[in-house]
View 1 (cartoon, rainbow, N blue to C red):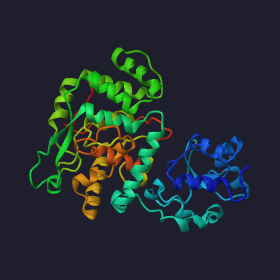
View 2 (view 1 turned 135 degrees about the horizontal axis):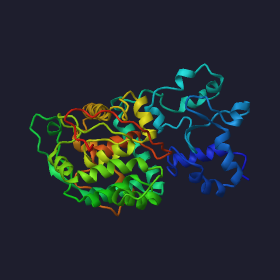
View 3 (view 1 turned 135 degrees about the vertical axis):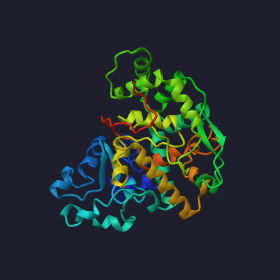
View 4 (view 1 turned 30 degrees about the vertical axis):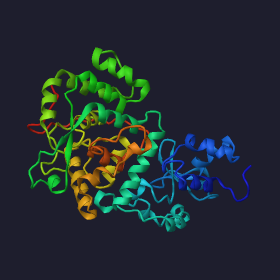
Length: 385
């Protein structure tokens, strides 16, 4: 058994301090490390649940509910935990939900933890420092690298295979040109099959990839969790030539004065990922967890107004850049996932802007597909038949 000075939560804190685990972690992430310290499998399975609470304090672990222990972690997803007081937390870019409930006995017990961390505040991008944004993105990459999908590795491979970095074509008075923009990423003249292969590698779990491809290409029945990707991809396939021409004819980036590509509002998160992949330097995707954080930060709901969300996100990235003198190259360098995979080539133009913004809010976790279809804007690129 662990020594008297070795507690479960101190062990977790040391793992975090040494960057051995990401700031949001699961039991599987800590199991091997804590077993080496002498903690039993039962302790590893039960203590996180017993001494954790949800962000709003409504759901409480058994020890907390019984008043025998203070809450030591937040439940931020199914089986996903985060230390209370972790200064690198994504909670620092969400609204101060906990601060608004200071009078509750549960949170009074947790009060000492706030002395060790930055205060919670609203999450508009420009309200954070450039260093804080870098840290949040770095933690997102670390978490992604630990998962089975290896998202950060897939995105680097996709960037080299499917995209080209074109010289900035903007006029001298465009914001990006005035801020040292060297160029923009644009989709190459790829076939739909090549696009689909990259899509499933980026956005679909390994076990479902072939099933999704067969459903899109051959109409095979598919009722898995990713089924809402099928119809948008089928419509894209039917209109591939004309859509690809429009995509390749768009030579701006998310930081240009011309705002964002005019596409139809998305019906679900998988369609949002599809449009982001088409306009990799201009449109930010979302998933269930990141959508919650995006809304809490004060941005439009992406499933209701995908373009408005993107416009405001990039507007605030420009404000962050101006506040810290980043310019466009510095914005791209906020995200450096290739450092996790040193054998991969560094992208010619740095990271695509959509990746940078996405990771401010994205951390792997449980996802739920939302169903919503809004009327497309007049003149929008649409896949409707």
